[in-house]
Image (cartoon, rainbow, N blue to C red; front, side, top):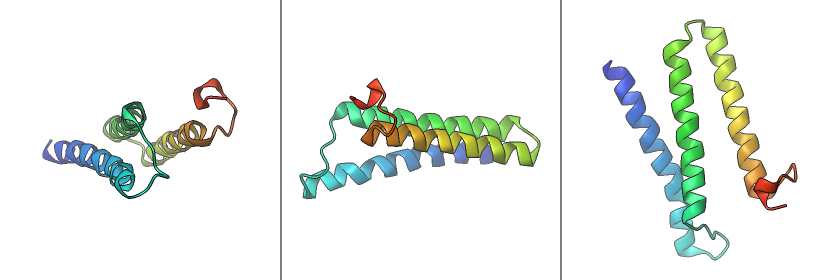
Length: 96
């Protein structure tokens, strides 16, 4: 039980740490221009990915399935992130 709680704390701290990168970068350059919505969307995306991976770790007992499912979750995260960032698919979500 304690390991699971530590993993959850680790997930939240990792999300905060990742979100600090653009926040700090915004202080030094005009190239990074995030608003509150950007932070909320990315925070939700990262936290959701972390919590979904945690759910898979807790519920899926077969190691190979666990690795495969988490890999798919990470691929989905990267595709959504790329779409939101540069619109690789040209969906309405990217502002295309």
